[in-house]
Image (cartoon, rainbow, N blue to C red; front, side, top):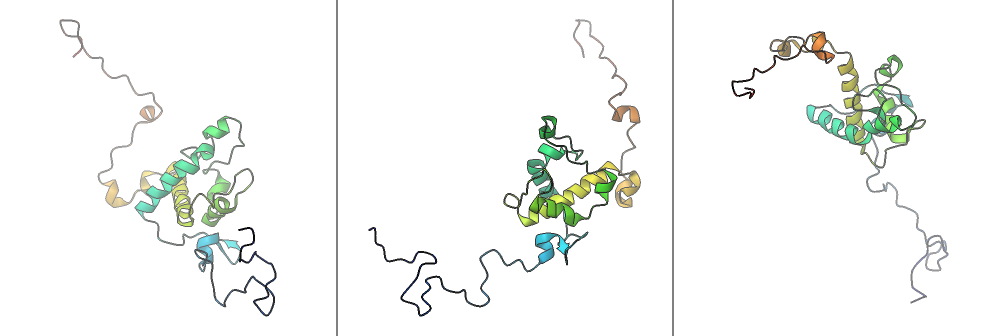
Length: 192
């Protein structure tokens, strides 16, 4: 059993005329799951320049999936609202910039994809954990987060504004709502 009839990689072989056991690959062969013909989809770059469009149409389902993946992988550092005050940061990890920072708002979508793919600064890469399509979905969700932080009623399409509730008074938004009327006790001392 110690002397098995097999080729060990890069060992000499008397069977082949060129004496190599490792055979050259046939022309046109592609490793399984590695035919990355759409370079923009896999890099977020066009001719080495970060792009600012999505490689596929983003649907509501894509945004939901992006939110789910964001909540799993991104919130520990970036927080649920993207302000950079995640749980890990509160314990001493380096704080990432807020997604609403003016400089970050100007960043093309390809940058976010590239950072998730290759890492940046203190952020590790997530290429092994998050699929290519899900990385783009997370980018779409980040854009939605950015928009939500600065959105006004004018940003809502007209067909949805018709049934939109009145704006919430600022006092209520800040948690300073007027106290609710106290329930009146009944004759037996019980509240109604």
